[in-house]
Image 1 (cartoon, rainbow, N blue to C red):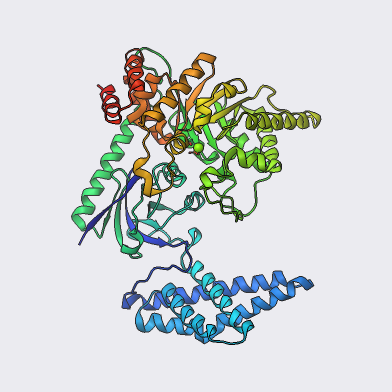
Image 2 (cartoon, rainbow, N blue to C red):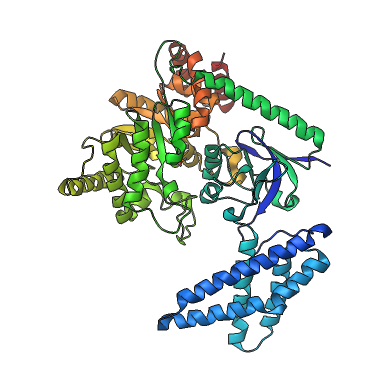
Length: 575
Ligand code: PEP
Ligand code: MG
């Protein structure tokens, strides 16, 4: 029987496909019974994982050989190889698969728990400690079985896609799926402006998040429909439901293709004013999408995606190539590249520092200034790339004047180095900053005096103004772009920018949401930066807008402080 689970719609579209469960809490595996006819296949999965882990351990042993310090490591690896071959572990797990029809992960974990119990009875502390090796071997096996992105199922014969179901996915995991023919994402946690949701949108993959315990109700391979527009997941749909959703998917595609006709229409309001429609990208791969909608430029290049989800950091040349290729392809159009915004939910691999409040911790410009070597490398790469197009460098999450002073000093130092090395760069490259922290919006003068442009990161500005974690689904209902305090900060930033002749854009998700286009235009915003998929829909709004008429209405909205009245007044703007 089909049933529906409601969550948060974070990436539009409809996906019909089979569930692929992913668990990242390694030993917290799913328990399910394998159909009799698939037992042989399940045993094969288990044997295959054992062979893979055996290969990994042999490789480790080879790497550990040579050198005194490594001989102990070699002994541990030997022990783990022995455990892998011990009938008490793998053979016993095979037995659980064959006789009790447990899935391989569940069988291994059950057997591990049984062995650990036995180890705990041992008096000898050294031998008792060896239970850790049993756990580690099982962890390795489970990791292989869980099918990390590289082991996702190949394209299915029935033409349906794979729906990745996870407790949570980091932005790095999500990017890892880029080349894996994934049809949809479904997660227990997350919010609409969590970075995972942003990445899902950038991949154009329908996603529903904040479904609480969905992993517990779904089984691997089950048929589901993900409606990323309405925020629902339909489990075990019958043929009629699948047919209905196929139809709906075709209609959505038709609507999108109609919008494509607007590609070459200039984004001018009814009064003839041009509005810059820029795109947010995560790397050179996204430029094709930007060109497909004829964007006016790049308003936000999130460079951190070059850094996360990998073992080593990109060096200066690799970064230079990535930035140069985007600048070259965009030609005379401006490309705003943001210095890396790592930290919070975009952790670097190998960074084991766990902060109690990561969103309030060492992230964005704070991280850059704490890692001057890494920052210097990026600044040099950016400056070198500036010779190939119209680069603007943007600094995220400014709150203090000294953060921008230090950044500008580092830029000057990098420029001096390049001059000495006779490397070409744009001497007058513009440096701008993001208004994402209420403190910056409230004391904007100190940034206006030091910078050439501003961009409002509404995702973080809302998070920090309303004190809600944007990645936490438990407080997602409090995430409100129309909160009077948020609107006042956005409005004041746009006005101050205009007063000082400093261009201001919005590059948070609000800029790509048609529900807010008229409001932002009425506030005086003339530069919108968004995901490429939203550009034509926003252009449609711009073409209908009469900013002369909107401005006084929006000024009245900015003076309101009753949320319901604000909401109604914003809806009335559409006429
Ligand atoms: C924002 O905060 O609005 C923004 C654009 O930056 P990010 O979403 O990458 O934090
Ligand atoms: Mg931000």
